[in-house]
Image (tube, rainbow, N blue to C red; front, side):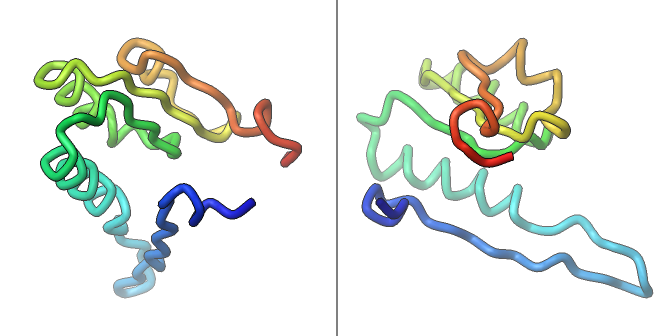
Length: 102
């Protein structure tokens, strides 16, 4: 079964190096914008699943819950998922515990 069957889009944004330093990539911004656009186009959506451990999504989650009362589930990596998600997401999961991937 492929994720594309569920209309899941894989977005690959390479890391950018400027003068040898890694710059913050634009994946977070794209995901936040895509979430807003999806909710605008499909107002009946009542749940969002974020697959990222990055704490940059906490403001997005707070906004979703404040304005739309949307249930938010976060799936992240055990070793890098922000502890801050526990206070804002409805549920959090480590992908290692829901798949056979280590």
